[in-house]
Length: 296
Image 1 (spheres, helix red, strand yellow):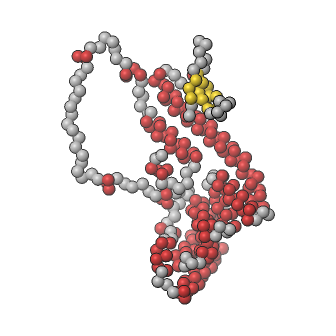
Image 2 (tube, rainbow, N blue to C red; image 1 turned 180 degrees about the vertical axis):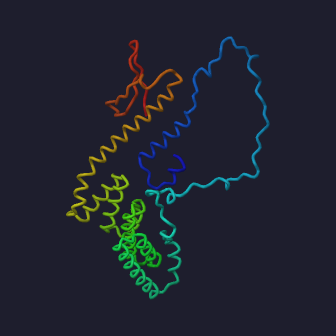
Image 3 (cartoon, rainbow, N blue to C red; image 1 turned 45 degrees about the horizontal axis):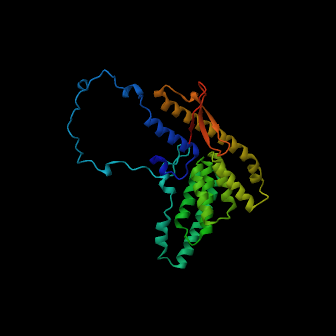
């Protein structure tokens, strides 16, 4: 797997297939033919030029591993319509934890009151459709609200996700909803917003899982009921499309491998073994002979 996908938290099937086929295509991209490896029987040993002994390549003493740019972490790789979460939106909970060690209970209570006031300010900005400002207020509240008040922090994360959804930052909204759910695993509104954000980013399986969870918490939830009927056929259609695309890419790669031998995948047909349920390529029958090749 490439470095790009290694540091990505959520990787779709399409990304994995594209990544694998890209690497294979690059490794098979040379137009090498079998003629390059065939020696003319009339060729003598004297006809071959002696191997050249070029100067040994010395490592550059100035180079070092630190010169290689490091891959961006998953936060930097995540994109929503070109919008990235700014540094001001991030909340360093480890630093917050360290800060709270020296706080008294009265000081924590005072911080809780301030966080509540910031939440109210964020709500007012949201109602006025000032979504960027509401995100700022919710973030300020998260940066001051003590970790000992998880319910209040969950509300701040969930409210911030709603503002990000309004700005089409659905992947960022998913992360905020997930954080809210970590703090309160029965937070219905967080599941609803995460399910909607998942569907908006075409993560239908994850969306359906959240809607099913919503029905566990509230069996009468109308939107979740409709989604559990609407999403399964869309998921099946998406998987069939993905399967077709995958087989098409595998066929292209097979043609690249077989081309030097004067063959193509047209010389084979794809069949499923009735016993093992495995898939194998079976060559098209020629001259009464039929050879089978396993396809993994």
